[in-house]
Picture (spheres, rainbow, N blue to C red):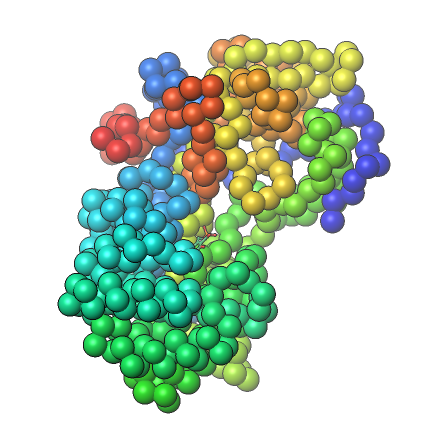
Length: 464
Ligand SMILES: Cc1ncc(COP(=O)(O)O)c(C=O)c1O
C-alpha cells in the first residue's frame, strides 16, 4: 500500500521513473517518423491521439492463441466503450471479432463498421426500448439484467415477429451486492420465463459483471455460470451453452518489478499538492499481462483438478469474452504540445509544464489517480544531463486540471514547443472523459499504419 502523509520535498531528488512499456511499432514511429508526427500535430492540433489498428489486430491474434493454448473455445467481442475510434471496429470485423455494445450509438457504429448483428452482444443495465428493438432486428445477443427487462425485450421480439437471443446476467458469489445482474430467486424465475416465452426468447446462457482484475475470481464466477447453465438445462432450457466472462482482462503498462518498487516508494510528496491530499487507488499497471490472465482464467481448477476450460468443453459450453482495455494494449498514444513552463524549482522544487489541451483527454477513469506512466519528452534541442522535475497541467481555468499530478523527472529542461508523448493510452484514457470545455474542439485521432519496407507510414483521420 502507498504511504501517505510522510513525504519530504523532492528538491534535488530524481522523481521515480515509471517507464512505460513500448511496442516496437511505437518505437519505430517515434524514432524514425517523428517528422510526420510533428507535422500531424501542426495540422491537427494538440493533443493528438494516434491510433494503431495493426497493434489491435496483433492483440486479437495473441488473445485467441492464449485461449486456444488453454484449450478454451472463446469468441471475442471487443468492448467498444474503451475507445470511440472506428478503426478498431473495422479491424475487428475483418478478423471475425464481434462487438460488445452498451448503447444504440455503439450498436449502430458496430454495424456501420461491418460487424454482423449476430456477432454483436448488447450489455449494460436496463437497456431502453430503442436499443432492444435494434437488437431484435439485427439478431444481437442481449444480456438481460432483470425479469422486467426480459419481459420488455420479449415484447419487442413478439412485436417484430422474431426470436431474440438472450443471456441472463447473474450476480456472482463473490460480489453478491453488485447493482448488476439477478440474484438467485430472480435468476431462477427468469430461466422459467425464458422457457415459457421460447417462441420469442432464444435463451443461450449466462453472463456476469465482476469488478477487479483477478483471474481467479473471474474463473470462479465463470464456473458458477456453467453450473447455472447445467441447472437451466435440467429445467428444460436445453440451449443454455454460452458463458460470457465479461471484460476486465488486465493489461500491463510497466514492468512488474518496477511497479512493485513504485508502490513501495510512493508518497504524497511525489505529487503536486492538491492531488496528494485525496489518497491513492491505482490501476494495477504492472500486474498480469492479458495473455497470462487469459491462460490463468481458463486453466484455473474448478472441480477438483479439472480446469475451467476442460469443464466447459466436457459440458458443451462455449465462452464469450468482452475485452476493451486489454485489446487496445499499445494500440495508441497521445501527444501534447508544451505551451508554457513555469519554473518553480527554486521555491517548490519542481516546475509546472502547461500543455495545449486538458486532462480530460488523458484520463484514468475509476481510479483515484491520473494516468501514471511517465510521458516521453520530445525536443528538438540536444539532450543534456540536467534532470528537470515537473508536473503537467492542462490549459484550462481549473486548479484541478492536471494531466500529470505526479512529479516527473524529465531528462532535460522542458521548453514551450516541445512535445510530451503519453504511451499506451488507447484503452479508456483517450476519450472516456473527453470534453469540449472552453468550447475547444475534441482532440482528433490519426490512424497510422507502418508502411511496407522503406515506404513511409500511412495516415488518415479516424472516421473518414
Ligand atoms: C459488460 C462489460 N463488458 C466489457 C467491459 C470491458 O471491460 P475492460 O475494458 O476492462 O476489458 C465492461 C467494462 O465496463 C463491461 O461493463
